[in-house]
Length: 327
Ligand code: GDP
Ligand code: ZN
Image (cartoon, rainbow, N blue to C red; front, side, top):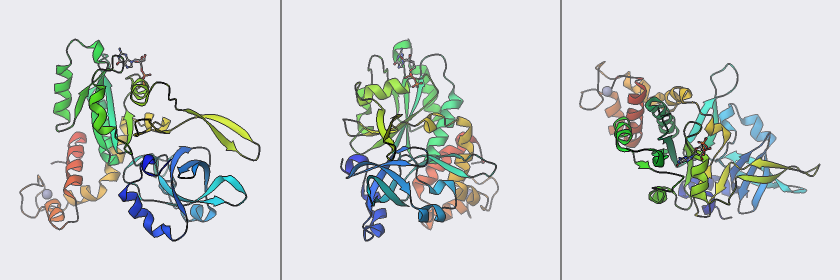
């Protein structure tokens, strides 16, 4: 497997550059086990363990690798199946949740997902606010949301729902599909190019597994054998969590992503855009719309190059969705 096939690109190459001299290799976290990771690189798939130095230096749970992360590794002496994990490369995108425990600590559910298909279905179990919350979680992650309305075969009229969604998420691509009849699936090709990492979010029963099977190819299963404990020679069958489809795109499907409850989105959003939320409190006018007002802290930050326009746009959309601040 080449790094490009695993989703490597210029962003990660640049992030890796300072590590190149160490002789360590880049690898992607393709599975999370208890205390171990499966790391896949040009050397194949091996078991990775964070070094003691890594563990000692990590202050928060978010600093540990998660599915989809890129890390730097080196072979463990005397065990050809194991690698040391030395460092985590910066994440392009990340889905977070609150770590277990009382402190409000961030834990990473999945990293470096490019595109998220937000799946709803024409099955009478649709709620706009749920889509909005998933949307908020996706904006907070930094990934690009795409809306899929599945089970079109069950609907007489697909347009009313399409209109409602378009109202809640203007400018977002909306696709009406049926995993059963394959209607509309070809149109997703631009988001399923080699090296692109995608995930599906949506309530249970909307058809995510069926869609993945259709998009990836029927006979390709997520189930795989993993050598979990070399010393005892045990092999365990686990769910694969990151899969390279024959078409070249990469799917991340972890229980963690599936369990992302829409209610956690708000905390995620606040965390992801904390700096901007602070900025909005520094405008001269309390009812600033952050567009044309004089002494607008947001516009000043954009003009100074401290805040990217695209990020502000994401933030604006999401804050509107959640009504966290007045815009
Ligand atoms: P998940 O929980 O989101 O992964 O949903 P599943 O993929 O398990 O699908 C839930 C149910 O919906 C299954 O019985 C599927 O066969 C069915 N289903 C999935 N896609 C479609 C579709 O396009 N049309 C219809 N009629 N049923 C579908
Ligand atoms: Zn302002």
